[in-house]
Image 1 (cartoon, rainbow, N blue to C red):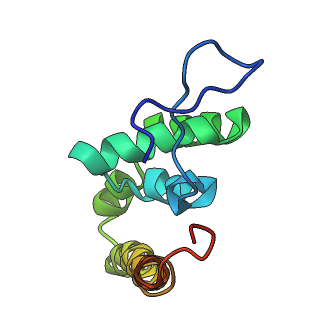
Image 2 (cartoon, rainbow, N blue to C red):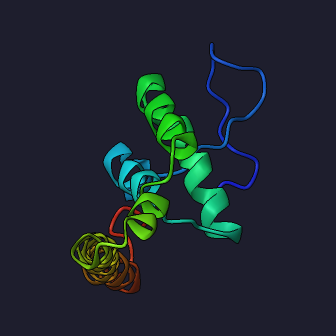
Image 3 (cartoon, one colour):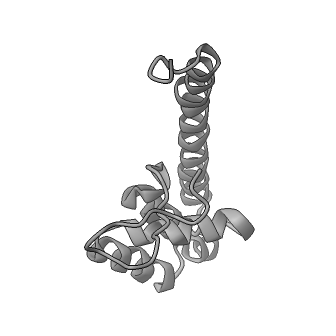
Amino acid sequence: MLPRGVLYEGVSNEPISLSGGSAAQSSSIQCFDALLCVQHEGETGDFLTRMRDYMPPAHRQLIETLSVCRSLRDFVIKSSSSDLYQAYNSCVSALADLRSYHLNTVAKYVIVSGNQVRSMGCPLRG
């Protein structure tokens, strides 16, 4: 962890702090959130908003536009169609399932594997 960031010579005279790779940088997942009116509060919401800084500008703009357009959720509720309501809820559930699957995969292959490597020591340190 580099609490003060990294000094990139020729780029900035001040250290820069960047986040590592994250699925939160995926424009498609945040588009689904915006389209389905899935709100994230607190630290999670702040994190997702910050991750937009790593997206291409056109992708950020699309997410922001979807966020301020008429609400799909409100449309579904006002439609009084039980089929449409059920389909909408299925989409929200599928997105939640995708997130859970992703988090489990990260825990299994990144976090646990990383901890195992650390516990074995670094061969470069001697």
